[in-house]
Image (cartoon, rainbow, N blue to C red; front, side, top):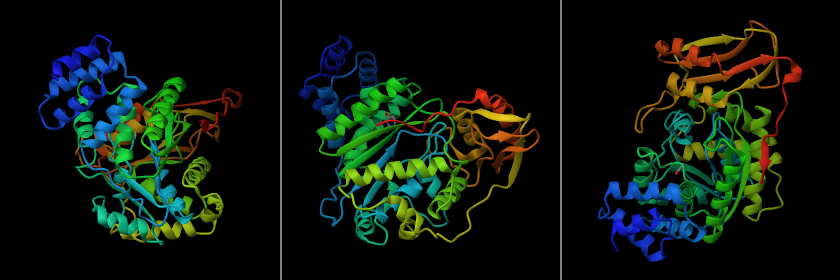
Length: 424
Ligand code: URA
């Protein structure tokens, strides 16, 4: 084989053989295929696509570039959830302990935020003492502990290393936007983490990776097929991401809101999505005699949250960090909040310091935005609409300017409620 022959096969619209795929991924991992060659191949894939067989083989090769964890010896079934990323999407925080409280084990290798969507590890790191980097033996101990049963940690360097390098290349060569490449990238990591079952939350809308329903559904289908091919029971929900989830976006703010949900309160959309995903996860795990709503209401999910935070060095009773400065955005008129744009809010939250512009940048734990109204709510002129939190007040003027177009206030009949759950 040669890199050039693999690239030109795909460039000219051909189908790559299993052998070509295995070779090129392995040679890339060993440094024998150069970055520019892999980037050229990625661009050819963006244009020509990959068949189901090619995508499955590509995914297997990505997994094979590192180690695949195995938790089949645990006494409980394993199941995980993956979201393609949204604004205010803190669902993992209440969901993982809830599902653990219902009898499954949740082994979640998670990521940090990049772009306008937050990362689960950044959120949990707002908790004093909490550690994202834990060893696989420790991961197994926490999963086996009947009091905890859920672990959310950083993926080790040996987990799908070819994907790590390829994703970084795609990021700087305009080759992220390919359904087979996105599907194989996400699924290689989820399959390698060793979960027995998986529920995907594929976001659709302004604040999501996939802005259109049809492409989101295509991505969901591709990922469900890859899961099935690898022996991981997989189901996907398509859910709306036009406005932020819940009433907070930003690391510590989202932890606080998640704790409200675990205490039996919290915003209706967060509770709805948490329960919908919990029910899917339990079904995939073969647990059909427990109602997650009970485990949320009676405090069992909260007990698991506390145990899971403590198991990773966190203090569940420590006060959460607060930003040094706040600024209130007031409603400019009276009426109904007809639109609140997830992308604009996500970009503002990042600018306030909660997210990062470049991989490896630090984030502020306390920064973010609190929403005082959700789309459909009545608002009166002068009432607080948003509160901005930041340690770097010099960014406030530019954030305020950018938020000018983030919302509309209109007549009640200009608002049409849309469902959160779009498809399964
Ligand atoms: N997230 C990933 O992990 N990979 C992609 O390709 C896109 C999003």
